[in-house]
Image (cartoon, rainbow, N blue to C red; front, side, top):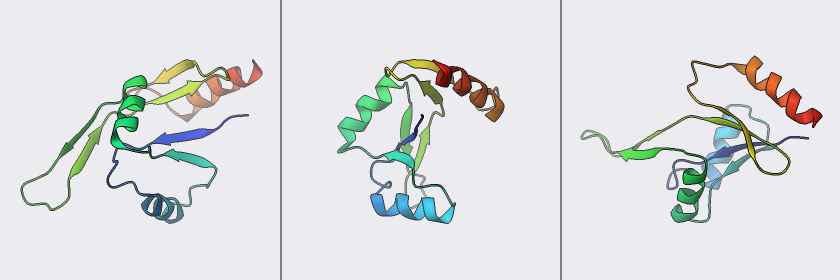
Length: 107
C-alpha cells in the first residue's frame, strides 16, 4: 500500500549502474524506487516541487564534485498530495514516520 521513492540530486553521478551497485553494497531492497530523471531539467522540476535544494561544489584538490543538498522525507497520500513533511533529520525519527504512515494507510 505504499512505495518508497528516492530522488537523485546528482544527475551526472547517479547512473542506473551506480544506483544498482549502491543498492547491492548496502543491501537495499530493489522495490525502493530511485528517480533519476530523463535529463537535468526534468529533475530540477521535481526538486522545485518537493522544495529540494541542490548545489555542486568542486574542491580545489579534488577531481570530482561534491553535491550538497537538503534532506527531506515526505509522506504522499493516494491522490498524490503531500500530507506530512519531515525536514531537519535531527527533529524526527523512524517512529514518527511509522506513526504517520499508519494513519495514512487507514484512509
